[in-house]
Image 1: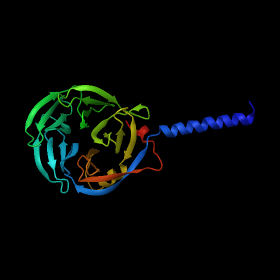
Image 2: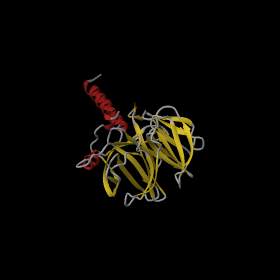
Image 3: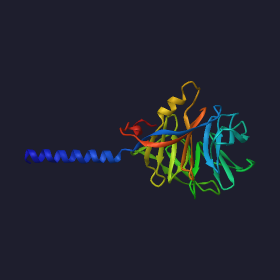
Image 4: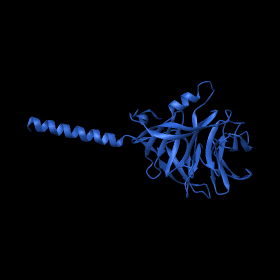
Length: 267
């Protein structure tokens, strides 16, 4: 092969390789804060959702776990039920007239009347319970691994699983969940990153970096990790908070101009 043809072929291959690599890279986002709301700094937030004009929140830690109904504008808790101190409360979801809650390591979940918080029933699962969200036909559950369990909303039995990958690598420590415009948004535990997951493929299609927000909220406050995503579908508002955070934020996503390869830094 003549030298110029060899060089051209090498250049073409290199160009194609770079193009494919660029296509495979997961889009990254930073955020702008659109509004700030009060949040109970004593709340060890495990689950968060927006429903009929209120926030619903579950808190964790043995002896301190609760489910709550909260006024968004003021952060005031207007309804609360403490959980049996034997249990470490985890994520919640509302399905029709039921508020459904997981516990961490007890392999038991509870259903309450969504209006009164009166206990209705319990259900069992194997392994750990971390978080819940839903679309119109299914409930999705995280358990701290790289799999999301798909539950039948009636029986709360597992029907299938979604294996989640980021650039082809299993994504571990999937935590609090929220259904947002056909995607599952997920906090990745012990990081300041939210993954946007395609539920059909399990592929991470975007990563939201909240490091700047987490660093700012931590100044002068005793805070724990980022955890808690809620979405107001009608108002198209996205909210985030964290464990022991004194504020809850309405945020907007901004594409990051220079990627930091967040996939490679996640558990």
